Length: 147
Image (cartoon, rainbow, N blue to C red; front, side, top):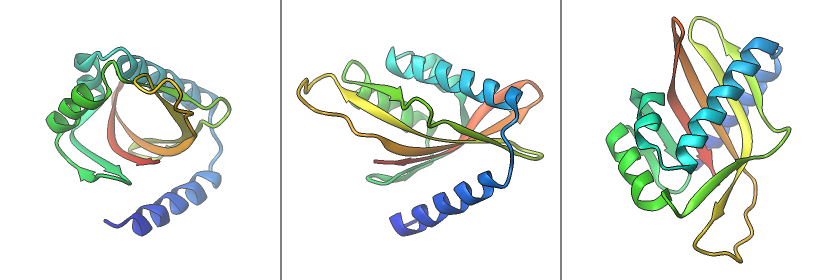
């Protein structure tokens, strides 16, 4: 999938999401899940991160492309992120919309702080996370990360 296709998909998702109203409970649930997942990300708790990712994860990154291996995503996180990078959600950027019969889509902006380069100024980047709900369990099935 090309960057152009990813951008088109992102635009479609933003358009789709604007057609639905965020429910307070769904927003609260996804916001809490986002917070818990990225706390694990920031503290290098790979066990907790693994519990969030679906075994059928699709992770689209505008620099590295598509990754469908949960194990590879976690190994890359350990190698390139742990102790080096932390993620901060941009306040007020989070949007959540239902995906009937599936779960929810989360849209927002976040910044990554490079702890190895103290003078590096982070900038906001967009992301999309698709959450699947099976009974009371929520898992991340798709991620689009645009930097």
